[in-house]
Image (tube, rainbow, N blue to C red; front, top):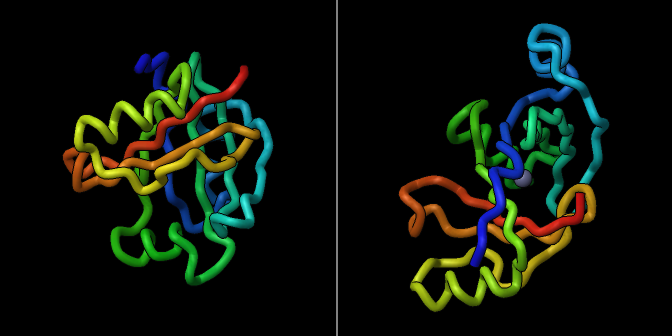
Length: 135
Ligand code: ZN
């Protein structure tokens, strides 16, 4: 498999509106718009930084994965996403190497990317997302 770059850092926040004040107004990053991924009960907001992006994650429901994360750990970096050349190939290879997969098959993420998560128990406690998308 080939990892091309850090695609984005996913940061769980209570409110994108509130967090925008830091990332847009204070740090001066460009806000690229938000998108709700209903299946994941999350609204995402992207701020490009160089070749990568910051992704803010706000829950849309009290039982969503981000709501649960915030309850347990509070706001902070929730996952790191690596862009790969071919996600199906990457998943097959990782599985063969004994990495626990949360998603055996890619699913659709924000921006039409194909994404899959690896289990933090297999990755030194870091929730890793791998993603494949056209720029
Ligand atoms: Zn992500």
